Image 1 (cartoon, protein in one colour):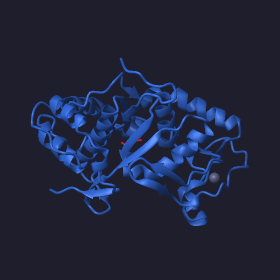
Image 2 (cartoon, helix red, strand yellow):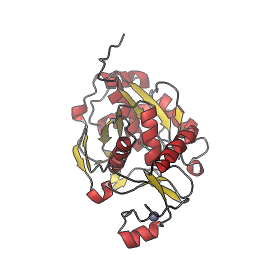
Image 3 (cartoon, protein in one colour):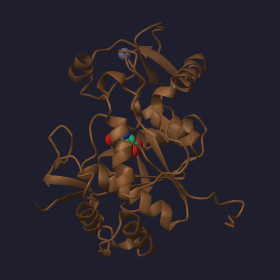
Length: 294
Ligand code: GLU
Ligand code: ZN
């Protein structure tokens, strides 16, 4: 039986892919890194499908992601959470923030913000009493720095940190920042392990945790797999889908990318068990980007 002391909650980690296409090597880094960290801490590893944007969801992509994870031996705990089933929770939160005066409607266009406000929203609509449009958080909990578990102190500009950012888009879609915070809190996630492309997003999310008075998780950002400097591997630049039938090579490459020792070629389950046993966080490169050798 696992014993956890009253003050330290058991570790809960997660992987939260968007179903916009098949998993690629970049997604495998986030999946494997978060899995190893959770399992090395004897924790749970949850799967959340971020289908918050139904028009962008690719038919069959969520099933394909689940199959790929299973073929790679990356079995998740509990039931998969789908963001598309959480719209009521997001809406309730927005309604409450609006009622409390902690959020407001805004009708400024991206262009106006770019041209008149130098790209950082200046609170123009805060006291206009608009009743439709996008919804912005009245951001009273500026977070300009946090301690990343791998990278150490992370800083963003004061103006970015204090921006009233969007929580409901003008097209009616829920904003990623809001959904991810409500879901990570709902699922009891204690540490968020993901790619370093979301470092700045973490400041926004910390503002939301504080404003909503939710317990704050730890953050650990892994180096991003890049084709060349500044170009991350992504669906947009046609990253190759992971080979579902041959997980071994990609698993070894992902372990090497994360600075981990190689494992003996075997079933993916046994390879992962060995990788968990020898997982060493100190070996993960403390970088926001890493080139992949082709
Ligand atoms: N769904 C996001 C993505 O695919 C990841 C969100 C997160 O890990 O917080 O990039
Ligand atoms: Zn506005």
